[in-house]
Length: 350
Image (cartoon, rainbow, N blue to C red; front, side):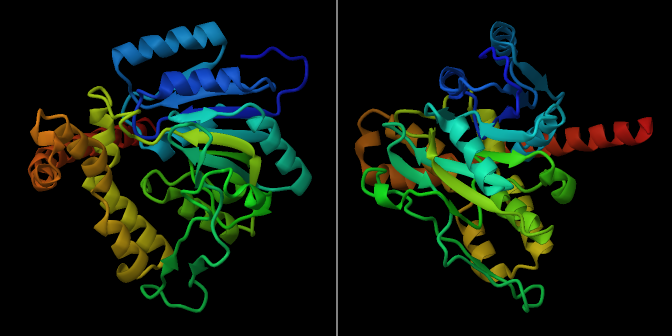
């Protein structure tokens, strides 16, 4: 980490999103492209012996803190854990499959200083070549939240992303600093004192968790969210170039398990009085796609000869998905058991 005499205004909390195989590139990119003074906290759930040893070595070499929980964590639980070790003016939350372009942090801080924003999100690109394809640069202005005046159970939400899928060169004229209604969790800067108003991240919401937090922020006092395209990061979306590895599989399956998805959708629905039809129903309908597209289909496509036949891959996907879903369900059950045990121990100690 860089050594500076200037005051440290920001703590970066690096957490897991869905895997650990991209973490080496993410951490190296962070350290190489962030000359500004910062503190770094790597917050994870329980990790493998190999990953623990690697993180210990890296933390000693580069002078950051690795905080490991005794059990598996959801991504918001990991953010909440890292937040406990952040007492600076700003906190940046970044996921461990994000790579960073030089100047990203100074641009986020400048935007927050100049606008008074509570949250600042960068231009988030996706895949390779890095920093090329727009993944998220805020929401479009027509996003609808029919909360006001609608009774619980009849509210709905429509979401549309601004410029997603376009190349940065194609839409360069539109990549300007602006306010937005939401931000994704890949990477964002937040004022530390915002949590005094909003509270911590909801540990049960792992799908569309950024919507929950943005809505809570506005409900708590209309906090402002800005996007700063001068700050650029890239989310390494799983692909043939960056595949889900065998070592990634346990957490990836848990992260996108039906149990975690259902709990997340149920929590969003209940907290915000959303109707089952519409947004919630559409999210439930595609809750399997990450395991299907990033695990099942890639595995089938590697089969000699047959893997090149679209019909075979399409038909066999349902067969291979079934054991994957079962494994995910077992891991979700174990997670619930560990979480209940931890809660019981905490209650007994108090």
